[in-house]
Length: 215
Length: 109
View 1 (cartoon, each protein chain N blue to C red):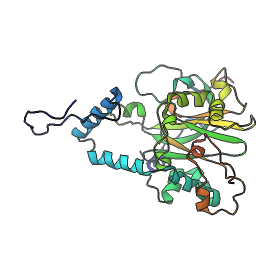
View 2 (cartoon, chains in turn purple, orange):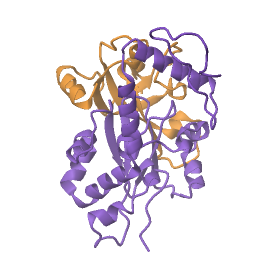
View 3 (spheres, one colour):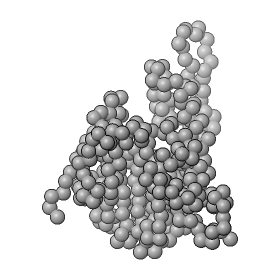
View 4 (tube, rainbow over the protein chains, first blue to last red):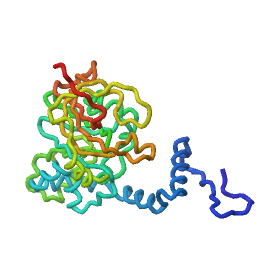
């Protein structure tokens, strides 16, 4: 495919996209591009709208979620608000939430319950707090096995839970996005909120890991 | 729809099922953009909470308005009720977000 051609450019003429040299232009990527270009041509949204959302998502990292978790560990009022209305709680911390048309929901790990998040249909993920999901989260293997054999999946992540701890899997199939509030590690009583945030890993907020006491 | 709007609409409408109520997921094959996974259809669970009212994704997928809004629930299932071969703790559960029109009441115990 090439964008060089010798005919005259009529008004509204569009070049075909440049081929990627470092990736595969699969059927579904072509489909996405075609649909996106059609929607832009029809005026449903603009290239600027697409860029704004992509740039926002790509600017987010798990550090955002870690800040929320550390605040919940240190501020009981915030923790309560977070568990009742996570969207409002995070907006109150300054996170831009309106761009994401979903209801953020935080589920809390306790000594009796361990939460694990999956999206069996696609890749629903709390992007506003964690950024883009890891590749494994979108894989067919994780999506199908996390609901059916979560303990085996957790074991492969290095997490063996006793049977008395209930494993609660959340399949985010609709308008909710789930973040796990991990348990605060032991021996962190003297830690500041910022020091606590540095301990929180992405996987602990998906539920494929727990947090160990720092060395 | 954002969450604030959903909450506002929720105040004006009611959820057909209450927390703790047992429901069965409708076991039907339907074409289109369905958010109810096949593995959960026909299974019995318990309402964990009614989340609010949201546009129907089965309509939105075809460029329609998504109205009337549908009540959305978090429904909790015992893993041993979902999978015959489940291996894990007896308290292990699966929570799924399901729209009201996919649920039906369970009459017999």
